[in-house]
Length: 202
Image 1 (cartoon, rainbow, N blue to C red):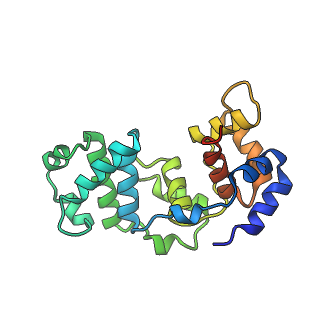
Image 2 (cartoon, one colour):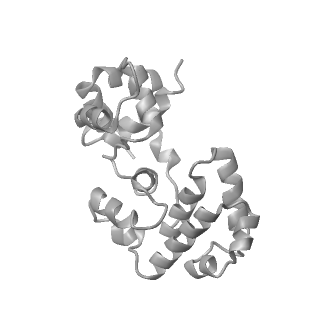
């Protein structure tokens, strides 16, 4: 993927972001892109909620090891709750995983079906699954569906970066992030990636 035009537009639109881009250098967002179908992607997201990455990765691996191949909707629905608890999955998350599997079985659109849809329509559709909120779908849009104009306004990393880089007295609320983000359109995803990376800067 070529981010040259996006980066040029962002630099012109926002001098503070331009400075961040200069300090970080090349955008390597495409190297963080994930694979897998909707069931795989969203079940992974559910298992990562409210856990450190390290712990979530271990639980996700244990979950996958319950099955001989990548689990299907029926595999998940037919797995006893006790078996899922035994690999470290909490009761609410078991409910979310089974609701996801059931909704996919009932005809939730596939990633291929969703491809021509607008971002907001995808968010409205997928947040009907228990435990899937707006932020989770936005991560799917960014890291799985390669959408270029996604700004997760309630992401703590984005808010922290904006507070630091734009010299705000406190964490910005969603409205402030959205207002600031107007200048990054139609490349909000690329801006978000740079804001996340800016947290690593000294």
